[in-house]
Length: 490
Image (cartoon, rainbow, N blue to C red):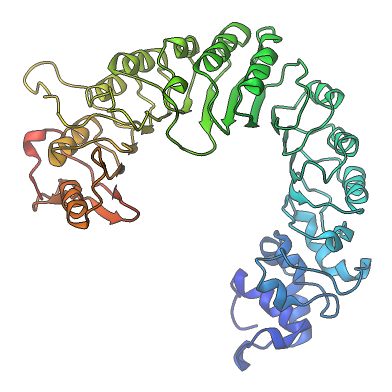
């Protein structure tokens, strides 16, 4: 060989050796079989062989249609023309010594493959479809790959027997993370909780009739029903703990439970979890929608979360009613905060103003990303001659959602003074009450958000992309410290 081959070039050459009709290679790219064999033994191919797609490309031409594989997103419609045998995987099995992650997406015919999963496999992510081979396949993996530490299985509720799945997930003594979309039995959950290294458990509760007590370092619940019953069961589970060393708590709601149910959950977390251990909390809706007024959290129940001083990531993507005092309370209670995402009720004007940013700049030195809906129709003045206002060097990303903005350049100047190293600002197009969709009005709003540099080298450069009635401000250069130095026009 006269030159080193790039990794993306290697798999097509191997496939062309088995089935030249599938690839049109120029004469200068053709390689004879001895050279190809030497290439297959080359260590540089190991990286290219770390995906199942490239391993499947190593199969003989009579076992499958490689071209169909290329046109079907690598496996969704891939079916063997005959049952695979061990010798078919002789070359592929050589490369699986370095295989760490498996993510097969296959039909029942592909379940015959067990040699493709390398002996050092530590992470498995796959979709289990209904079929008689599912049990056999799971049994093969559990006996031959005991070193798995992370498993993510997607299955229809009725496609896999609960007993079979429970037996499977309990077969790995080194398991640390498990993500399921179907139920396993209560005994299996209790056994997982006793594993020394087990830290993360995510499961779907829609058809689960149980929630056993137990302390796991991480709980993540998805697919909660909207009638409040499932959320109440989660609260009951939390109440059964005794100062659990919970580090991460995540709930995804399909529809809105009552504010009372949410506040009861927050109280249970504060009373039954270690307040020093929890660092992540996420309360989200699976689909953003305008909720009924009675579903909005307007009481002080959320303040139970202020009792967790080590929170670094908070997502409350659910329409809460917050104001400037609430933002100040969050900023002072969570000094280690790195990410904060809040969603405000869309049908009401936000009660949070730009002044709330001063609280985060003063009390959250590690904050890197902030999502918040603000009333940006007035800009507070910064006392340049008095005590210096806080400069926050770490914030890089600011999502302002549908914040109403009246004077865009003044808003940009205020933000730039507080966060001199910000690199991304996103603001959705604010639609006035009554919703005027006239193109001319929309263009005028876009122009108000378009900020241009006026020849100042250290000034602001906003690059805007308009798509689906949204304006993006990205690639902001280092901003000037004093707002009086900022020369902008629009």
